[in-house]
Length: 140
Image (cartoon, rainbow, N blue to C red; front, side, top):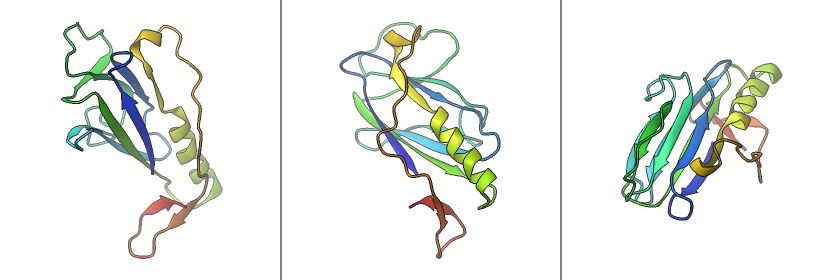
């Protein structure tokens, strides 16, 4: 799993780019500061696993949502998104595909959409393990 925190108070709406879930499963949820679910991402989410650009909007947003974005309205300025990438198998190629999906997730202010900043990954665990109590995978 990995998490992304966001704040819409400083620079306004924030773009969350999510790739299409190809080669591995990619599931996520965006919540506000009170952990109220705002939108699900992935096969059962708004994007139906096809990915897309989600526009995280501050509570006082009055403008028009540009075309091509899934609007996500929040009652708080802060929030976070939690994601889980699930490899088809524990094989190196499948794990690499799952990690590649994670590396494609981007977040930046809408003000910088014409020239998004380079994405940085501060801490990134690149290994999966099988959790013994369930047949799911989690980062070490």
